[in-house]
Length: 125
Image (tube, rainbow, N blue to C red; front, side):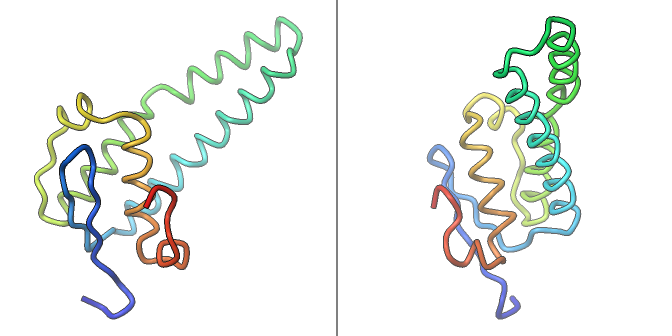
């Protein structure tokens, strides 16, 4: 293991995952997913301003389009992280035994483990 890389243990609902390697593919996919999440937040913020009825329809349509498949994207990233660390990936477990916060914390801890942020503390540590 390289000196500036660290192996972390992440507990999710009683399971411990030992993560050493996070690929560039994971980082790119994570950033793309986060861009979508930021855009979704911007759209939700627009709805809070109570725009005209026609604009509401457009915003809701865009939210549906952006939100479709987000869980699949997150699980695809998790699968890549786990298999890249020789850990068996059980999609059913992730779908049925975790919630949105579990998944977000797991991804954040993995993606930021070797950054300055990760070395200080990632939210949820």
